[in-house]
Each structure stands twice: as structure tokens, then as C-alpha cells.
Length: 585
Image (tube, rainbow, N blue to C red; front, side, top):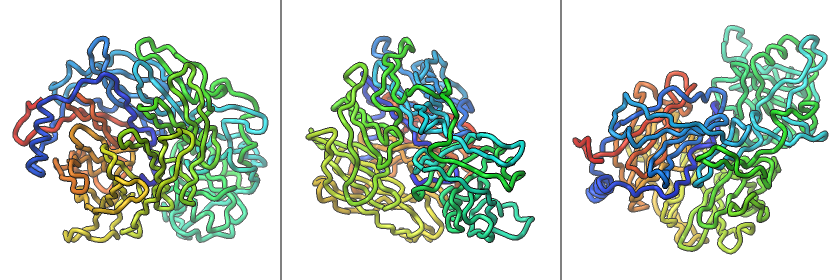
């Protein structure tokens, strides 16, 4: 999904399940009956929940899923958070009701020192990867010391190095040294305006930020908007001051080469405001002056045995990777944007060797646009394909990987229609059959057109037939009326939550989650009303449902960022049942 004022948590569920039990017969019959009746209603029945346990207020990542233990024939729900993996025994909790919670059986380390990492299970191992984020390890060198810092000098008592949070598009270590003064961006001359320091409108004092670092406060608008208003005023760098002393990775769509754009904590913001004559330095040469034991030593790919919690491999063929996707057919892990390199260099890693070994690297170069590294795999029989979403350019490039995992062949480019001019491309999802893909917008805006005649703005899926991947064809456009203004899909999940018989759950932020039957790929049928844990909270993509996984036990495990403050994530076990029935499983 598109980047916003809150970080999109790229590390959603990547649950590789081994020897999992087949879906229950009752669920299969229920879904089959609903599909046959073309939208016969199903109810969403709540079972147990994990409430208020996992803090995501500082941009910490969460991965989660289910794992079936083939030795003990037990099912577990797992959550990877910070540097640990919690495993909950769920066999005995089915049907316990929403007031119950599963038992935490054990906690094992992820094997990584990074608190912003992505985890999946490849039985019997837990695989964790991470990129170049503020709370991750890095490879320190004299010409590229890390972790990166903001240097303040000439400011008296505030002189020193300050922690910073990067953006997801252009990391600080990809920027040459920028040395400049400090200017505070203002959008109003009215001193009583509480939002005049947020940088959400064109600056009224460009002369005070031109040629300097433009400092604005977090809140009220997208990080991208703050950056664009600062750079329009002539700033050489942009700094966002957080509401507290934490920093996060800011999600943006584009940052110009050579322009440092990062976040600092509230205390550093006070230093800047109290020392307006200070000189600021940031970029590749500015970091901690010597290796920090807590950050040094690359652990970009860690493998831990799920039974013992012991690390299986101590070697990674790369230092960091912003994302990773696993191909179970070839047993290859595609590590994206390795070692902080530009142009989104991808490494194909052979996961059948110990330690894992590199098969080589490649750069996505098709279609005359720069890759964002937002990759998804799909299959057609024995053929393997790769979708590369370039959201800022509004296109998806399609490649084939069948003949070589390090030489993708560019086949075609799928354009987004921009049916709503104020809504960018939010992402793409392939159908499990590999015959169609679904392109979708980002945040639904009030200005979007009314496509179904109900008087309100509409969010639609653009459906492309890719039976011939070299010639994708737009065969249908379908509205999703459950969406509400201010929300988007794929904000916390990299995919929809697919279950059996081509049923998928669509996460919609404060609008909740709704389930559709995609048995007919060009005519999806709604199966449920939205499952909304906080119906009084609306028009907010930063809270609500952030994804789900299907557990192959008849349950969907739904992640919610609680609606009040959005500081914690909780999980709900739900099942789909025919209306009026409560015990179909």
C-alpha cells in the first residue's frame, strides 16, 4: 500500500507451513455452498484473542502465522516481535470464545539482533531477514560508519551525534555528506495555529529554509507531503521531529538523490530549536565513530531451529535486505535491495545449503522504470513469474524466472488506470491460479468518482487476464463497496489473506476485513459483511485491520492495530460460518 503518516509495516505474515492439516470438511462445505449460491451470507464468528500484548508504537515490525508440528501433531500460532518468536499452543483453544486466550508455550530468539525484521517458518527452521533500518545491525567501516547519525555542532551544550530514522526510499548511507544550517518550516504566520510546524502546506517562510535543513514536526499529513513542501522551499535536507524520543522508518514514494530525509526524536528536536545557529551534517560519512557491539556483525539472514531455539547458520551471503520472498518450488530466497545498494539489487539465495549460498544477483530493469523492489511470485504449472510493482510510476512489470533464477526475462508491463486522479497505485495481488492479477489503488479519497451509483466515492479492483503473461488484458473492473474514505488495502499485509477454495480476506484498516470468493476470477462475490472490531472508528488507515493469515484449521487469524491509539497490535481467531450456525467447525 501507499506510504502514509504512520509507517506501513512491510513485514507482514510470511507463514511457510509444513505438513499442515487439510481444511476441515465443514468449512469446505460452507464455502462451497456460499459460492454455489453466489454470495449466500456467511457470518464471522469470533473465537479467542490475544489482546494488547505487542507494542508497535515505535515502528517495530510484526510477522505472524501458524505452524503445524508434524512430530507432536499440534498446531501453533506464532508472532515474531522485536528479536523473539512467541509460539502459542492453539489446539485446545478452538471454540473457547472471545474471552479466552491461547497459552504461550515457549519463546525462542529470531537469531537476529534487529528489532525491525521479517520472519517466516520453513520447517523445522525459523528464517529472519532485515534491511537497513534504525534498530538493525550493520557492517561498520571507516568510509561508511553505522548506524547513521545526525551531527549537530556549534550549538553549545547540544553538540553531538543523534539517532535518526530513515525513509524507505533513499537511505542516509546512499547520500553524500550534506552540511548546512537549520531552518524551521512554517505553513502559517498565525502563531496560535497548532499545525503550522507540520509542513503539510506550502511553506510561508521559504527564505528561512532555502539552502538549509528544513525541520518540521510529525503529524497531520503524509511524510511525502512534508518532504515535498520543504524541497519546494529550497531546502537541502528534511528532518521530521517525532512526538517522542523514538524514531521510525518513514514510508514515502520518492526522494531526490542527494537529499537527506530522516526523522529524529523529540529531544533532538528541542536541541535544534534551542540552537538555531547550529551546523548540521548527515550522509554516508556520519555515523558512530567506531563499531558498536550491539550493531556490528551482519546478521541479515538468520536461521534458528524451531524446536531448540539454537541458531543453525551463522553466515549470510549478504549484509542486509529490505525484503525477502521465498519460492517453495525452487527453494530459493530472493533477497531484495541487498546491502543497501541502489537500483534494488536482488540476490537469489539457495536455501538447500548450510550455510545458504548465493546463486548470483540481478537488477530489475524492464519497462524503462526504476524498480521499487516490491516483488511477488506466481506460477503457471512449471513456470515461475515475478511481479514488480512500481507504485510511483503506476505500473507493474511482469518477468519470467523459469529458466534462470538470476536472469529474469521481462515480458510485459501492466498500467494502472488512475481512475481516481487523487489515488496512486497501491499494489497488485495475483490469483492463486496464476491466471489473473488484481491492481488496486491506495487510500480512498473523497474526490474519487462514484462508480456504482450509490452517491459515494468508490474503490475498485482492476482485473487483468495474464493467461498469456506477455499480453495482459484488462477484462473487468469491480468496486469494493465495503471500503471507506481514508482507508486502503495492503497496508500491513503484502498480500490478501487467501484461504481454501479461492476465498480471500481483504484488510481495510478502520473499515475492518471483508471476505470475497474469487472462484470466478473476474467476478468476485462478497461472502461476509465487514468484520470490524471498532465500528465507531472510521476513515483511518493507521489503525484497524492490518492483515490476517489462514491457518489451515478453519480459522483466519486477524491482526488489529487497536483503534484508540494504535500503539499495540492484537490478534483475533475468527471463522466463517453459515448465517445462524455457530458450530460448523
